[in-house]
Length: 323
Image (cartoon, rainbow, N blue to C red):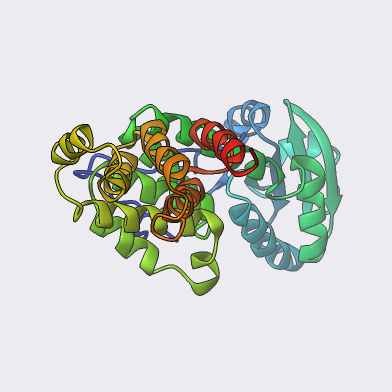
């Protein structure tokens, strides 16, 4: 998915852009590719220096070489799909024979991999695509391994930013992950959370409604959808100040207390919301057919198992249930 057709690359007031990178992946060359031609004069800069950032494959070829014409498109395909795990530099030995001569290359096509400024590996001949991929994996590691670890780290960072109220920064990271992995459920849920935090509830629901059936069943996505439902319900429950006045006059007005708990929850006052529900349970388990407990469990689903409010309220709930 490109940035232009990525519906999640939008922003809160168009301030957000997806600009994260993963691991040692380098930026593409100006031509939009990790591939370039080089000369004898530029060999040191294009190959030796660049190989200190990521492996560089040098394709020694000539216009008259039939096998070269077979191998070069395969090399270009694998390198471009690798998105910067390695770079490809092509050298026409008819125009620039000295480097090939210094390396003892007597037959083409020949591919030499440079790592940290030195030749590290190579092969000769028009080998099949599978062997080219194995060659690249041997140099750069299996495709996706480093990126997967980096994405997890970026997800963690985005979550911390969102929790701290840095919505735009969190959204930038989530958007970058979605560009790299359009079906990353954690990033999609995180982006929806950013929209909710920016009071763009309709946009969040629309975004989630467009997901595939499989993604929509993800637990994290479901939690965000339930959060949206809770927000919409809370908006219809009245003025929290008025509810607090009612409770001051009549602490056993459980219906008012249940409404207030729902409102406090969407305001982010989780501990207070839980305390109101626990109060109802201590007073009257039969109220609304044990509705306070059922509502608290719904809160837990949205808050998450490890959330401090969940942990604390679950402990108190257990003491009520099993005392």
